[in-house]
Image 1 (tube, rainbow, N blue to C red):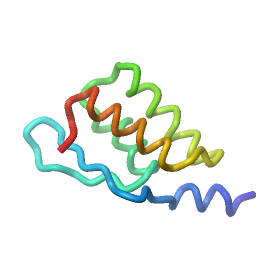
Image 2: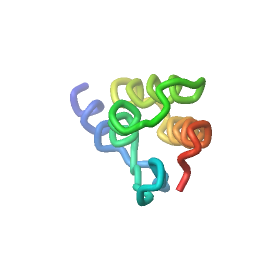
Image 3: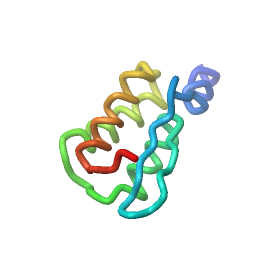
Length: 86
């Protein structure tokens, strides 16, 4: 069982998502672990339907193995919602 968690922690999306905070340089998010850290510590808007859903799905993906591409899609929608797509 521990190996499943380790694999999920190291899981990467098929294609990274590039986001931009304010006027900063675009940054590349490669998987749910990076996305969760970004959502927790760097996200400029701490509200919104997709923000909350992305937080939940990224955390769940790391614990239970929710499909990576579903989590990526939600993260992209949260990025659009926060006007952060690079």
